[in-house]
Image (cartoon, rainbow, N blue to C red; front, side, top):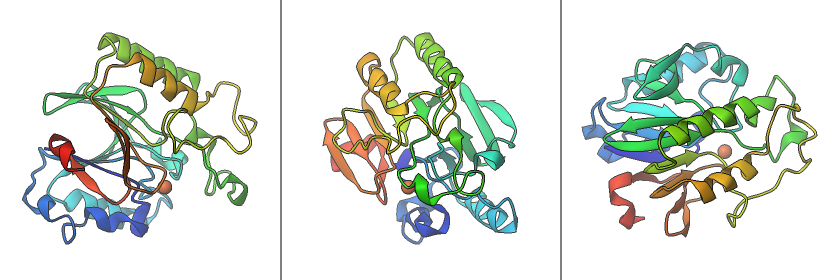
Length: 237
Ligand SMILES: [Fe+2]
């Protein structure tokens, strides 16, 4: 089974996937997946407090998968080994804790899942580069090209799209407070790219985080925060 939830922000919101609350999780196995839509936050200090959370996640009955949000320590995240897994690239954090990299198409339970993390930090003026803010929160052109290549190989057809931010025309979408001036020239406006995907890719459902609420914008776009949904039971949302 595949479950999807929103931002966990390290200890702040990780209770949502604690089996004390996520009762259904108690009966899952490592062949079941819980996907976090970014702002994972458990790789942040690079010390034993990170180890505590990663060890705990690895001890859970299922396999935990996450895409990156904007609140991640990208210097540390990108040090983990890259592996091929279910048709796409992951950073292997622990044996059953994997970072689904940008622009990949994974096949899980006979479903094709396209992943693309990242988002603008709307609170960037309160953050310090390399300490609690990283330019890597927005994609590079090469990550976008990787996405296009992988989507083309799949004839622009997937079952699910999983992102942290959302496409430009979505009612929740908030624009960059300072434009692209904080980023490098080889980086790209993520919401514009996601809008292109919305128009080009055939998909059944799109799941995203970032906006810290649980709601449905249209027939197939799910904004997630504290809720965990089974992709086979979307009618219950
Ligand atoms: Fe968040």
